[in-house]
Image (tube, rainbow, N blue to C red; front, top):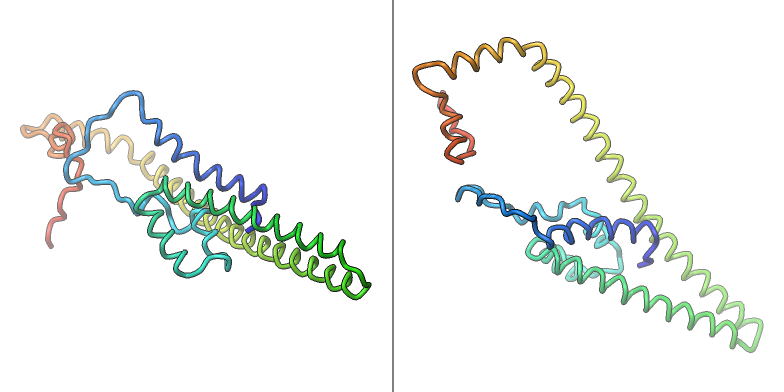
Length: 203
């Protein structure tokens, strides 16, 4: 797998949040309620650049399965292992290209030189096409994300305009709730640190 500037950038961007997370905040926030547990499967989404790399034909199905599982169970270890994979494969490819070059230089006949040259060209072409395929997938992911963001933006604008139009009515309603004989249940729950959504009333 060719470690291009684009792939390096994607890798560094993906590893940066892990670095920040390892540093820890200066002040510890209060622990969340027992019912609120973080979901480890949110650490690495299916569209994460590092997971997208696993689709390369340079990984076996067993490797993909193991690394995807590792990305959920131990994200820092996953990033570390992927970094090692990149380095080892980059080293292997460099050695291979130097060996092909040497074979071309050592060729004693025009036929052998031509065969060595074709082998170099074939290897470079395959590597380039693999890189372009990876870029194509990243581009498709990015376009899909942009369309989703555009839809979210449109929804946010509609929600804001609706809230703006109903501002006075909302203020009055909240005033009446706060001044009623019984305080609003949502404020009681918030004050107690219980941020669960209340159960829906059965119809």
